[in-house]
Image (cartoon, rainbow, N blue to C red; front, side, top):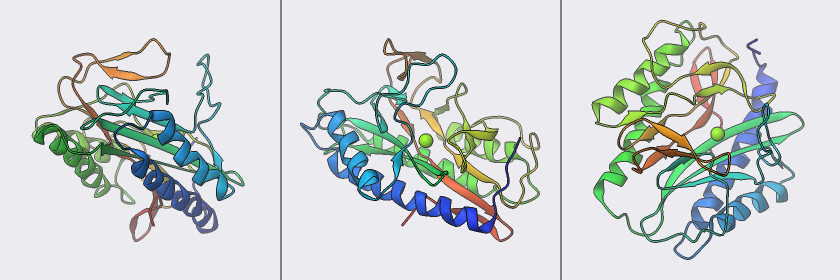
Length: 254
Ligand code: MG
């Protein structure tokens, strides 16, 4: 079931979105050479908790999954998503994806960014991150009342593949707002004109997950981290977006 949100509810989700935005900034500042991925997680969690919000991912599990042990997903290099923060030490040039969900009073917001530690190792890493971010905005152009969900999907896939990268197919964007994962699912690939019609009051987490090489992935031994099969880089960019009659509005911002 797709739950449409009122203006008042969207305002609450936007407040959570602002905290997620600030937590991502804190995480970015913590992504320095010599820091651990646990340090990155702690920087974000401290900010969320200091503002009276809950780090929603902590303890999260669906089905028979192991509860996620941290505030943020911190995924390095060939890890694309769902990386568990550890004592892993960040090195110059590492490509770090941070994905954060925060909630308060039953309202949730979700966003992700990709950062480079220090200086990029090569131009392709920078281009991968830029293409991933821009593919979100290409999809966003279609997040309008009357379109269909797969119009967003198609625009993302087309932009990513045109630029020589590939999209993950096993994971997708989703509705969000009164819980972490809601309907509809928003794949990052597919033909246009399919799926639910986009309506005013939908709140969507649109999140391209992009592979530098082939799109094939594996789950790592920790039960959470998703890594590229070919060991090449992955990137991630996500915002929570409200559909209004005047077009899409990003809620995870300043
Ligand atoms: Mg997310």
